[in-house]
Every structure is written in C-alpha cells, then in structure tokens.
Length: 129
Image (tube, rainbow, N blue to C red):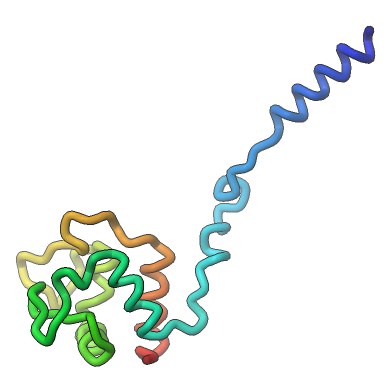
C-alpha cells in the first residue's frame, strides 16, 4: 500500500513540475525562429501586404502621406528618408514625419517584433531587392 501511495505522490509531483511554455523557459525562443540574416524586398513586401500597409501606401503617390511601399524603388526611397522604421516600430520619434504622425498601421494591430526586426534588417543590410 505504501508503494501505491508513494507512486501516486511522485506522479503528482512530476506532473506538477511539467511546464511547456517555451517563452518562459527560454525567453529568447521567439527570436530563434526569426531569421534576419538575408532579408530582401520580396520578404518585407509580404510583411507589408499581410499587415494591410498597402491599403494606404500603394501607387506612385500613395494615399498615406505620399509614401508608397508597393514596389522596391518606392519602399527603398521611404526607408532611406527614415520614414519606414519609426512607423512600423510604432514610436513617435520620426524626425521626417509631420506633426500629425500616427503609428502604423492605423487602427491595426502592431506588427510582430520578428517582422519589425526583418524590416530593420532589410534597411541595415542595404535594401536588398
């Protein structure tokens, strides 16, 4: 009988110690899968499209503050001017932005940290096409 009780107690202790939250066990786990080694415009174009950026920032002039992101040349020009990263990071430190600057996407959820890191890598790696 003692063996059965001891087995039950050990089972409870072992099950109670199990915790499968990878981000708590390894806080850097989210960054392990975020590959920013070689980011091209096509990879950030999908990020911009999936986050509804192109709803306002498409076409030669772009309806969103004159910033177009739907082609390589326009996106590179915006990034070179410093207009892209502050917007996706959602901070208001954009020196090139107007006084009525709003974090992007307007009315949308913040772009994931991994995708922000990919856009930053694209800029830092020289705007690869």
